[in-house]
Length: 154
Image 1: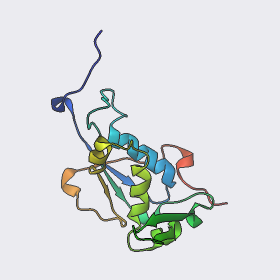
Image 2 (image 1 turned 60 degrees about the vertical axis):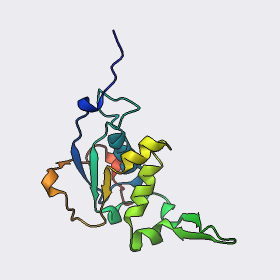
Image 3 (image 1 turned 180 degrees about the vertical axis):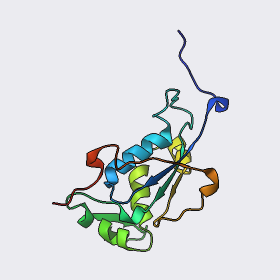
Image 4 (image 1 turned 90 degrees about the vertical axis):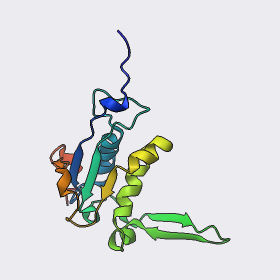
């Protein structure tokens, strides 16, 4: 019995469409990270880009549990005293709400060159429209995978 190792000729990439409306952010990010790496495939090879191309629509309607909407996100401009912050809620209501989803997925991937290459297979759109109809993406229903994937209002 020899260990199977995939070659670039063995890789079969699909296009996946995910609607993020009403889905909890962390659960969405973990499912997308698994798809981007290709860990859902039986032929997974850790050093190859085996993952699918993932399209996420309605990223501005993603849900956060608890008080995470009020959690500050910090970054530094590089200048002295240049620390800045914005809450996750402010980012979601701002001009680029897809950055919240992108950052969550990026942080669930390993921090190496392969992960940066796999992030190029992720396309995130704030609205319901996307320009990838020609690729005929398969719809992945994340809401119905698990009842915990959607936020229940109490």
